[in-house]
Length: 214
View 1 (cartoon, one colour):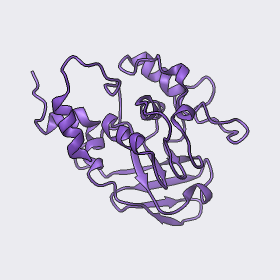
View 2 (cartoon, rainbow, N blue to C red; view 1 turned 30 degrees about the horizontal axis):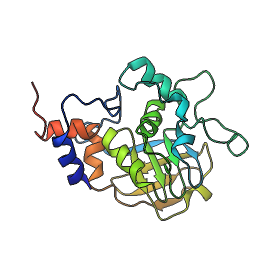
View 3 (cartoon, rainbow, N blue to C red; view 1 turned 90 degrees about the vertical axis):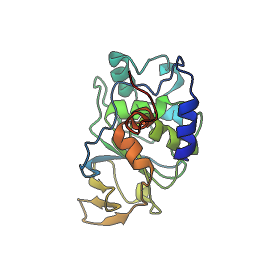
View 4 (cartoon, one colour; view 1 turned 90 degrees about the horizontal axis):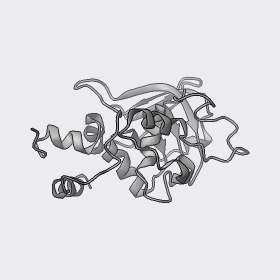
């Protein structure tokens, strides 16, 4: 999968505009452990991109710092209020208090909008752990470098509650629920990890010498 992305990147026209060129994203220093701790926000199955970031907010341009921040304030605003009484980003705030998102099956389904992982990253999300992802959403997470899309065979959305303190250790492939002490196995992030560590496919390609720099 990553090899195909690299080939597409090299063939990309220099003047093309792309919303994957954003202001901020996951950026891990060399040698740092790939470990994230914080409160989790729990969602269920089939969370689509319109729930992650409704179409009315797609006019915001992520390459502009103020619009990138504003985009994050609308992350997951499309979730139904009757099922999700807690807002992912509180009214009047720009950032979330939940750096870890828990999903069920088919997270990120729907349209292929790259704004979806960008909005989550702009809000302060660092990692999403779900049973499965829509393929395009998964690839967009890697390409933009906004957050790590981790997978698990465990139905964590039925095990955890919003607000629970957890640690996602992608080096040991384990999620720990600190309220119970239980640990859950994760699948390896694999080749996607270094790309997201670098901050996305463009920065990764630059570091690998695939893109000539002035």
